[in-house]
Amino acid sequence: MALRRNRRQYEQLSDFDRGRIIGLREAGWSNRRIGRHLGRSDMVVARCWQQWITEGRVYRRGGSGRPRNTNDHEDRAIRRVATSAPTTSLASIQRHLPPSRHPVPSRETIRRQLTEVGLRSRRPLRRLPLTPHHRQCRLDFADLGQLGV
Image (cartoon, rainbow, N blue to C red; front, top):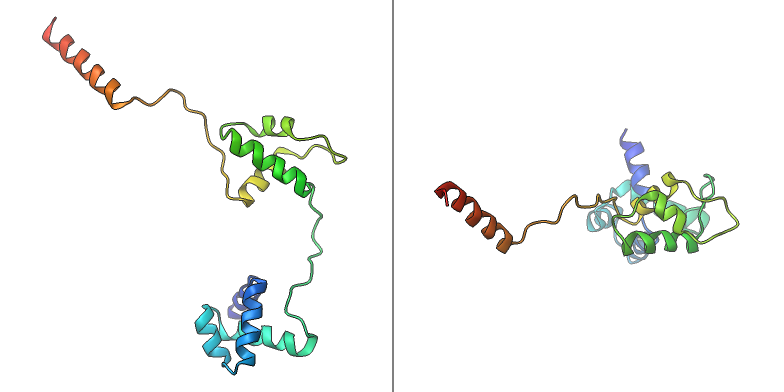
């Protein structure tokens, strides 16, 4: 279990952190000291250093997963529509996308893209919130009704 967690930590290292690990190791720091400094396990540091020694690289190879359905241009268009009108539905975002050579991205693809950049769906307001002045006017009206005026 610990080995799996360390492997996951290693995969989550950014390229910048990998470069820092190599630089600090070349400066004479120990794996444990680097791990404490970066908030990582010393095994993560050792694995990164070992990859540098044996393969001469510290970057991750590209994954063999499914290719993305949208390109960068479409991703930017999705974000632009979602931020310009936060209460738009996924279907309306889908309609506003520029025509492309791909099939129209599904609503799930659009939802994933928005989640990836930290945007969540928002529901439109059912009614406008009352201002402090409106609240006071309503209270005054209710008090008049209790007095029988």
